[in-house]
Length: 217
Image (cartoon, rainbow, N blue to C red; front, top):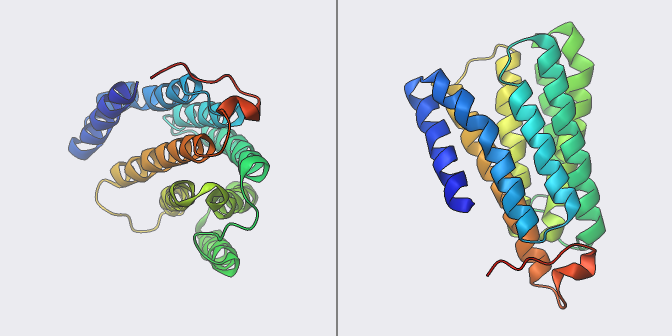
C-alpha cells in the first residue's frame, strides 16, 4: 500500500510540476484512500482513519474551483482536524512539549488571519478564521504523540497557509499547487505514521486502544 501511495504521490507531484492537469485529477483522489487503508490494516485508531477519509473528501471537493465546493472541502478538512485533536488528546501525553511554544502557535494564528482578512472574499472571512483556529489547535496538540506528528501538524499548517494566500490573491511561488500538495501529503503521512509508531511503542498491543490489531508483518 505504501508503494502504491508513493507511486500515486509521485504521479501527482510530477503532473503538477509539468502542468499536466489530467494526472493531478486522477492521482489526487487516490492518495488519502491508500493512506487510510494502510492505517486501517496496521490497526491504528479509527479516529485516524476517519481523519484521513475526511481529507479525501476535501481533496476531491477542492478539485473544483467553485465557491460552494471550496467551502464544503474546508468543512471536510475541519472535520478531519476535529478527529485529529480528539485523537491526540485521547492518546497523547499532556506534558509532552509541543514542537513550538503555545504563544508561537497563537501568534501565527492571529497574525495570519489579520493579514489575510482584508484580501479574502467577504463570504470566506469567517469560515477561514474558524478553520484556521482548528488547524492551529491540531498542529499544537499533534506533538502530544511525538516529533513525527508534531512535524506533520506544522506541515499541514504550512500547506493550508499556502492555499489561503492563493485565495487572498497574494503573490505565489511558481507552480503553487505542487508545493501545496508536497507539504500536504508529507503532513498526512507524518501524522499517520507518527500515530502508529507512538502507539506501537507503548506497552501492550495496539488493541489496548480499542482497535483491531494488524496481522500484517
